[in-house]
Every structure is written in C-alpha cells, then in structure tokens.
Image 1 (cartoon, one colour):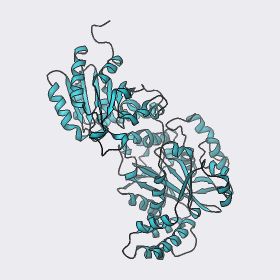
Image 2 (cartoon, helix red, strand yellow; image 1 turned 180 degrees about the vertical axis):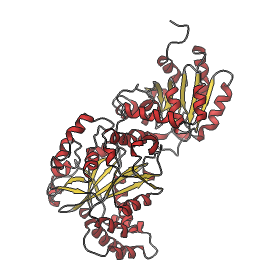
Image 3 (tube, one colour; image 1 turned 45 degrees about the vertical axis):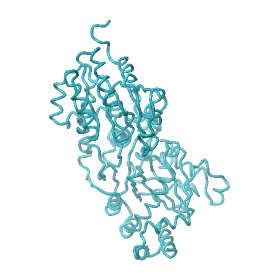
Image 4 (tube, rainbow, N blue to C red; image 1 turned 60 degrees about the vertical axis):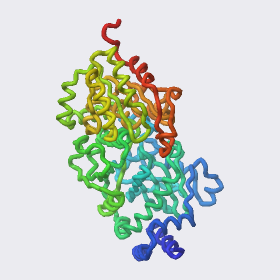
Length: 523
C-alpha cells in the first residue's frame, strides 16, 4: 500500500499544480490491483493529515513559516460589494447591486457578492494568500456528498502556490482556502459559526481527489482549456426548507437582477424539489443538463467544460415567496384545487404530522382532542392533515374518529404544489419545527404554533435561525421547553436533535385560540 500512497502523492502534486507529468499513467496504476482508490486516499491522508483551522485559530508564527499573509487570506472571506469591485479593478458595477440588494439579510446575513461578479465577468476572483495578487479562474470542481448534506465547489487558482477556494454550506458562502502543498485548510469563522463540521471539509477534499483519479483524462482536458462556459447548479438541496430559503432564493435574485440573461447552461441534479422551468420561465433559453449521481455531476462539468456557480442566498423576500404561491396555483393538481375551492371550514387549521423522527408521540389522540375542543368555540372549524407517507395511518385514524364532528382534509403525501396551495388557504397552523414550517411561515406567512424536541427550539427563538429567513413574517409561537418531555427511551437510535417527545395537547390549544379571530357570539 505504501507504494500506492507514493504514486497518489505524485498524482496529487501534478493535478494540484497542473505541472508536467503523466497523471494518466499514474491514475492507471492507482486503479490496478485489488485495493480501492478510496482506501489509498484515506491512507495517504492518515500519513499526511489535512489540518483544518479557522483563520482565528492559526498562529502568526505558523503563517509566517509558510510565507502566508493573514490579511490576504482574510480578504478571500469578505462578502462586500466594495471588495468585489476592488478585486475586479473597478470593472464590477457595485452601485447597481447596492441599490437592488441594499443590506445583508438572512441566516447568516449575506450578499454572496462573488455570485454576481462571476455572472457579470465569467470568472471567480481571489487574492493569492502569499503575495496578495488578484487572481482569476474559471476552473471549478463541484463536489456533492449527499449522505452528509455537503455541497462544495472548489475553485482552482495558480498563484505563487496553487490553492483552492471552497464555497460551501447551505448558503454556499466563501468558506475556506485549501493549500494542498501544505495540507492546510483555513476556514472562515462564519463557516464554523453556522455549525458545519470540520470533517465535511476533509471528506470533500478526499472526494475531490477520488474524482481526479476517476476522471483523470477529462480533468486534464478541462484544465487545459483556455475558456469555460458559465453554468449554474440547481437541485442539490435535499431539505425542502433549505431548497426554498437558499437555492430557490438565490435563483430568484439572479432573475431580479437581470443576470439570468448571462446564463446559457444550468446543470440540474436529481434532488430538485420544484422543476426550474415551473418557477422561472426566464431561463427558457438555457440548456438544461441533468445528473443523477454525484460522480455524474462532476463528470458532466468536466466533459462540457463548465465554470459552475451554485447561486444560493440566505433570505427569502416577499416577492420570492409570492412567486412560489403563484406557481403552486398554476401547478397544483386539479383534484386538490376542487377540494380547496369547496372547503368551507372557518377557521381552517393546517396541522403537520410527523412520524419518522422528532415526532409528538401523542399526535393522534392529541389532535383529536384539540379538534373537538376547537369545535366548541368554532362550529365550522376544519383541519388539514399534512405529512409524509409514513403518517398515512395516523391521518386516517384521526379522520375516521372525527368524521361526524369536524371537517378533516387528508393532505398526507400530496404533491408539494398541493401542500403550498393548502397552506395559502389555511388560517393558522400547528407544526413541528422543520422544513415543512417554511411553507407556512416564509411562503404562506400564516400565524401558528410550533413544537419540537429541545435542540430545534433555538431556531425559532428571537435572534434564531428562523428570524433571519424572511423579515416580515408572523413569528412562530413556541411551546416552551418546560411543557415538553423528550423521550430518549423510545428514540435511542436517533440523534439528540431528532428525539421523539411527549406533550399535552392543551399546550397547543390554549396558544392557538389566542391567535385565531374571536369565536362567533363573543364580544
């Protein structure tokens, strides 16, 4: 194995620096034999480990010993229109974006200025961490590790030392600089502040080199190109909430700024929650390339010579939310549209069911009792039961029990467009803190009550994650910690932030009736 590690080290040096050498022959040697290339890479990095540090953790003496400058490194993490204008040597129209996007917003507050500069000029810019020279590249390598929810685009630069800038995280921010000769990664403090793990960076780098070995010929040809075609990535977010608040919102900003006119190619991964053409007719002239696997994503970029940008944001505007509602009105199924049109429930409560994890253990009996109590105040009350397919049995039991008392609409496992349409019809909601809450808050902007195990509660507290997603929504009302009992004994297999829990239905009921309009007959 030691011999293969040596071969890999030589291969790695050639690919990182684009220096002379027969990388093809080395890749063939790495493929030969019975040992998997992943094992070879793991053993190499066990012998020569990648050090991952926040820029605040790196000592000045360490930087000086490597010839690195803290100021130049830190400049690569700046998210500011003036910095982008400086790096473009004043050719970037910063004033236009300062007017259209006047302040940072979101969780975290971001502009992601590099997205707009790349779309304007067809390159990604960075400062050499040794000399401060402004460098440009269109060499990009998308790495997606779906099981870790990690999507990183590496941008390759040739300065005094070859290095990579990585954009990562749900909002695809400028996250780190990787210096391969030193096996050193220096990370933006914001990357760690958002809770992203250090091992995600390591896994992404190891996967980058696996791709280089797997697609050596294509990668060498790609690096030899004088120019590459700009393309956007779409469909990477596996989580519905992050799709809407990060991926969709980023595309909406491109449309708002008119930069969609620069986009000729869009690379669409299999996780698309809503077809892009349904949301944005503005991209009708672009070529759509589809990918069904993580390797195919990389291979397609190399084969077509693409300079890829993943244009995420971290804040959903009211205009962006309205476009989603219009799309739902157009693409919801006719059968659900008819049911909604005939729905006379007043009020209609949208109730989110959850079964696979982070679930309210008494949800069936609790919702039945809650609906019966609401019926005493609101004779025409109705409930819409929302959830994944594993909630079907619970929904049917609730409906059969209440069928002679309360109008129950079964929305379990209906289409996303149907769920959004129902959210627009609802008067209020009861929802687990999770991705489904985005439909009711950021999209439909309804008042409601939320519940969860203890860790997710922090997301909806003042100043928490939810407060930065859209600045004009009704804040979710939280059932507090002292009214929830996490049940580790019934969810031992689940991580702490996905434990199941117990809750009295009255915790929801008494908060909900404070949000609804006064009951009939009461002054």
